[in-house]
Length: 171
Image (cartoon, rainbow, N blue to C red; front, side):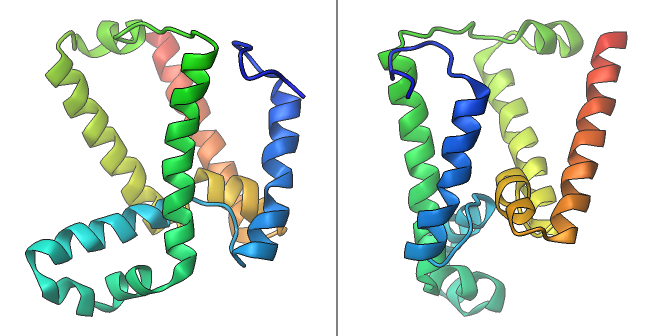
């Protein structure tokens, strides 16, 4: 078992640990690992604070009333907190700006980076909702269940990643 103070974990060990998390997820929460639904839950509650009628919309109501989605929300919060604590424990530091993005689009300000991050996150989340799940949902849970749709989604994700990486190399 790797130490929490190590800067890098073996991807094999990390993969095995994540894969084994499927067992308690299915046994205790009766749900697969995934993250994109938690953002719908959060958006539903935030929007309902402004307009109570949002909770009556079928799409949001489903995500605001099921315990399954509260568990996924806790999972996402735990992932963020765990990443922060891991970075602190291993004393990992990173550059404030990615050299690739700075070179490609010329973004050097914090607000510009935040805007790009928000836009990129919005596009990714929209894609995850259209695809019926996020990369962790399809890649980890769906493929573990041998779901054909997840195999297709992961294939498309890798193809898209390879395409973007090849475009980066040209720039």
